Length: 123
View 1 (cartoon, rainbow, N blue to C red):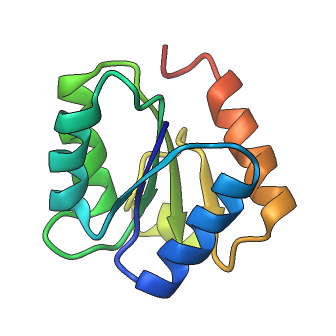
View 2 (view 1 turned 135 degrees about the vertical axis):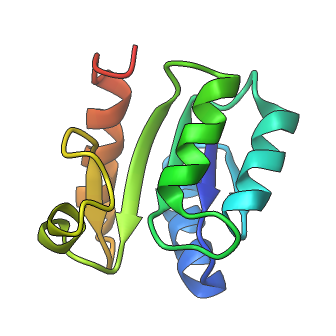
């Protein structure tokens, strides 16, 4: 399953539809705090996190760090309306994370998901 944390309901719904269309089971979270709670409930079935970088109650980086304590090696794909360049310049995320900018195009998005799932860095 994929845990999707996105605070914008319309964006969350569109991402969920893309994922479900390609056979993924999706567990929704409306912000970082909700994501940590949902992860704790479904820890054994979640193999990938898709986290918005900027969310209320806990940002994507904080959410990932907390979830990683519960399940080291969990894979993550960060999303943001900001470009990768801004994210790196402001040091919002570490440089070695996998990131996709919004708006999310289905084919690019699915390619990024495969890249994350096949990536050995998180193992």
